[in-house]
Length: 420
Image (cartoon, rainbow, N blue to C red; front, side, top):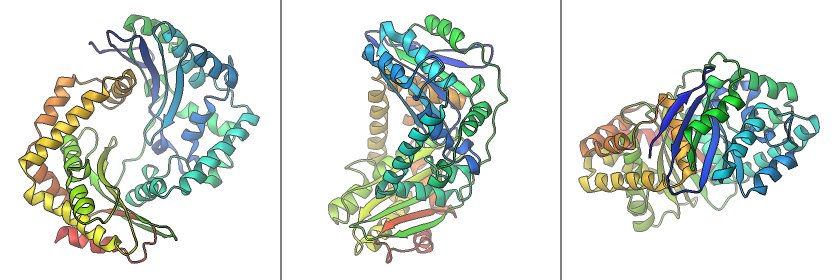
């Protein structure tokens, strides 16, 4: 398998990977325009724009978009994250030109008809309401806000309902004009694709776009804080975060291995100590997430009101213990899980296309898989211990609780226990 990366004269980057033996392909456009690129008055507009892409273009109605892709058995979707918006399709080999044409059309030619804006506004407001009614979903937005207060990276992707209620056509068009330039885009394809064909199709679809000055966003600052929402629920939803490394930090793989051995599976410390031995919860996990200039190590658990104090303190104790007693066996197991997850995921053309797009957006290249595996293998017990020690020494942390959390320990208490 061979990954090829090219660039049009206007700056659009194109990355492809043919996968012999496959009859299907995944192709999509990843735009470096997500939640953190919004101003306060724009919060939620990147996600709104993603919705509107499917509501009609200058060449196709919303129904025609759906029918054309489904007439060939294909699949079309999109998502918005804090750093990017993606539009992608999965089709058979013969329909790759159609898929690329539709993706380009919905991104470059949306009409933003007022009636469709009102329809989709209602859909998004329902989505916001659904998130607010899902405690183990909304609590992560609150944790993000506590970690990065008064910053774009700390705001919800969906946006507040009061802002979403007032977005107009001009607001959507303005955000596109500010952020949807070819230099902010990566076209990625994997599976039954031919690089030269993708290049020709891309030149036709995107070659006319004028270059756009690269949009800048403020440097993220992990400041930390606490948010506690008391509600009459069955469980307290507990989340705790420390700052982790950014994408290009040398510790990024160490952070993922640390999170895996701490709370990444049934053999992890948190699962064994908190769930299996003590029965304090049903669900508990740790994860390491990264952004362009910062990252987050996040812990989550759900438990009853009378057990939240024990759960929270024991969870912080496990965070601290890793710095002193992590074993070679734990690190070996976490490395194996990480490599297996990476390699299994790459059996899908959709996963490969997304991975390549993200890597190009971060490093402007696709590191060989062997390079990534080597970096994972280079993480050893001492490296994990050193990383855990730096986490313990960090002065900032974030805490978000939702439910009957009146008697949960506060952030100051947990930070003191972590540093003990």
